[in-house]
Image (cartoon, rainbow, N blue to C red):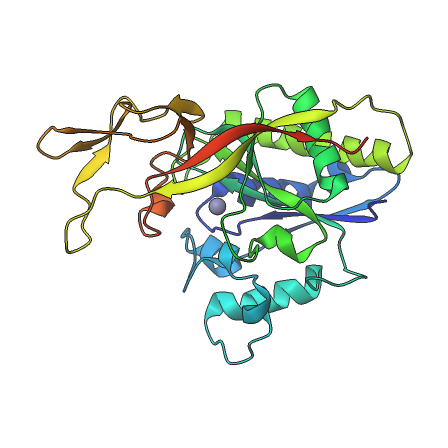
Length: 293
Ligand SMILES: [Zn+2]
């Protein structure tokens, strides 16, 4: 039973679809009302939103690991903010958290279409994903388990995931992706209303996912400067298969660098925010996750 759900936007202050959707719902709260649970929506990083930048001191969406949340000596803006948000929405790991489910809204400069990024493996999270995939055939699911501990925003609630939509530049709104994200949220609310009421939904017994395998950095020189760009044949080909010989990068003197390894799917290709993190794309395996029916 989901009693309270939170929709969070502006975790990254330059990802405007989540920022403006939360603004819309604050002005028209009736749009989120369902019969058997409560939904709240909030802006996460208000200072970054005001300045239309990803963060002030560091990435808020990596600030929710237990050690940082318990470390009173951390003085950065996002470390303090993470503790406040954890108190308000969590606390993380609690048996009696303030919200049961968090859906965190993001955009990406990569051509990811409508995507879910999930680390949580709870039954209710995956039943919700199965329902959304059943109703939105274009939806892709990327399971990220690349960190020692899940430090994403949604990790402070017992259940949840993030939505990523793209391609959209940082600091830009796109109506088509805004509407797709909004429709996906209403579907999610419909799911919880049916689930809470014990309504039979005929969910599929499995969901096809892209399971995180590795990060691929840009080629770099000894000073850490990138020496190549994402190859024109790789650009915008998110969720396409790459195999040995597939072009990955183009050097500034026109040499093609190809992939070597087992066949994998590339995603988050040329995401602007990941230049500083040191990767050009994520590589994933396609597999099925079975749903607890
Ligand atoms: Zn983001």
